[in-house]
Image 1: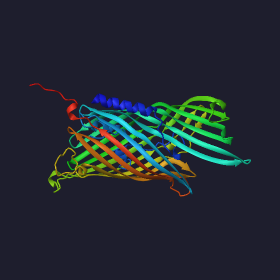
Image 2: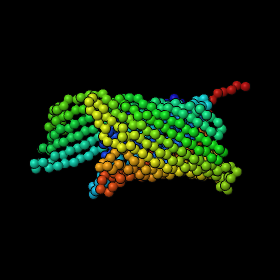
Image 3: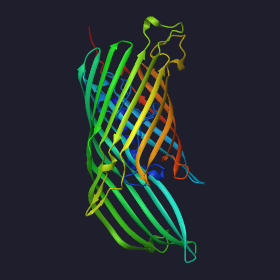
Image 4: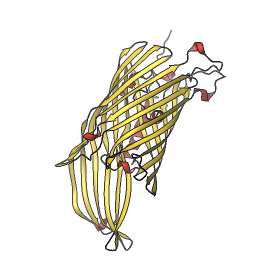
Length: 450
């Protein structure tokens, strides 16, 4: 089973590395693209909260201190898929966009009583936009196309150590080593239409990521009784001047669809420089209340409730692109996020096979909301991003091991103070996530002969 999970992980990783996965949003057109939260369905069902969502059946690549909380002897494989439908509005003009992608995949492996190891893949930023304009010059139409695509991904290798492992309190620290890779591309094109051919010039810039980084995490869980559980957690990513390669060229064309008509204006220039991965801090909590067995209701259910919140800040005001003698800061503002979520499980024991329990009573129901201040600024107005989400977790048990299928739906709006006159984006996002736990009977089992 372990070999199958490893083969599945590397097969999906290989496919995603070669696939061109992007987003569709004009807000991704600057810098290294849109670095929004790309969590899986479990987290998005709670409004994007991830820092303090720690349990034994969930792989959380966003907080490396979580790996030591995975159930002993039960490695977890996770994969997520997302799809978004978008509408862009500016004044009376509207446009539509959509995209589908893999949100993350990873494998967490506990060992000993206090340690956990994980590795996985998830996006850091994505770029995907197409803007078309035109003007009339000397009775002739000039067309301008602005395009961008690509993504920068993170390959993660993390380790976690539970320093305190008592019955009523646990404290864990962890670190993720990160390898940044991937490419983003920007193209500007100006042309006229002559005899059904496009005649003009284009300017292309490629940025290739090739550097390492890391982030840190801590988790503290306090259980004053079997009915209450409080989790406090935080993560920190240090400001990192990541090494990247940039290529730039400019070409004139007599017919854009015929490469033989291309005439190089500026030959391909390759430069090695740095782009800032900004400092980031996330702080979160999760409080869980469980009904005691002595309060078992007539229905036979033992429900649990939890509320969670999270605050994060990213120092995008320090963002810089440095290639040769060129320095570009883009004038970003610091980004902040405020998230709140609620989770309810009618009966918290999915292994319970009592005949009076219905399957949906073992499902997890989630609700969340969020308010984000994004780094993009126009005429002193910062992009605001608000939304709400709901999610569902469906457990399935194989030989006492609990795996989970998660689903979430998110509705959101983003724009410059959500003004009616400036660009605004409305979207509906659907995410699927799967946490697979292999059977107890097949993992780390030792035979004993009497």
